[in-house]
Image 1 (cartoon, rainbow, N blue to C red):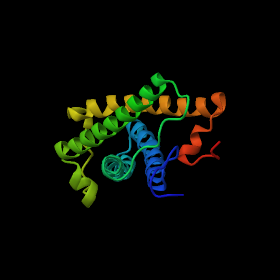
Image 2 (image 1 turned 180 degrees about the vertical axis):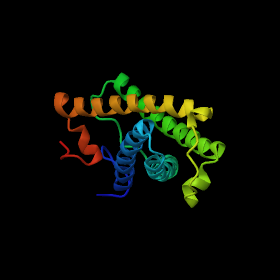
Image 3 (image 1 turned 90 degrees about the vertical axis):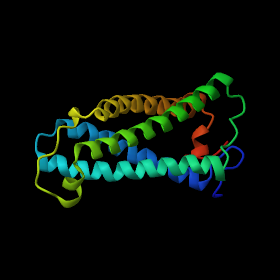
Image 4 (image 1 turned 135 degrees about the vertical axis):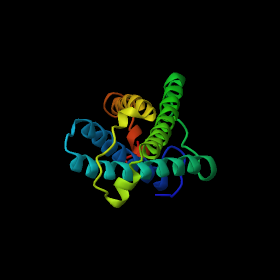
Length: 180
């Protein structure tokens, strides 16, 4: 497998960044929803530490992915026979996903700064965690999380539709299965 994308298949770098981001996003969305339900501050602090660390990783990975596509690699061509509306929709979902991740990272960072929680996260100061709902970036963070969940659902549904209904082996482009 090549480092860079070719023809109808993504390269190893693009695949690694995609799957690392996908796994990390599932963790972030799950831990974010979990934190809303936790009452114990010590448990919330532990989950928040992991959430912040993985969130920073996803933000860095996403910026790296954008740079990779702009300066180092080209996306594979669209599969033969794919209707134009599907290609445009796919492109839109990908762009909106990148935008949502960037907004999530920016709003998360803003909440950290505005709430003053950084010393608690880093030094483990025993202060109670702030009520993040009091900070304006929290509304954007929560709303865009649901938008991102919807975008992921559309992305996964489309991939499964291609794999199991159309049987066009589109997932092989991203390393799952054999190309046709």
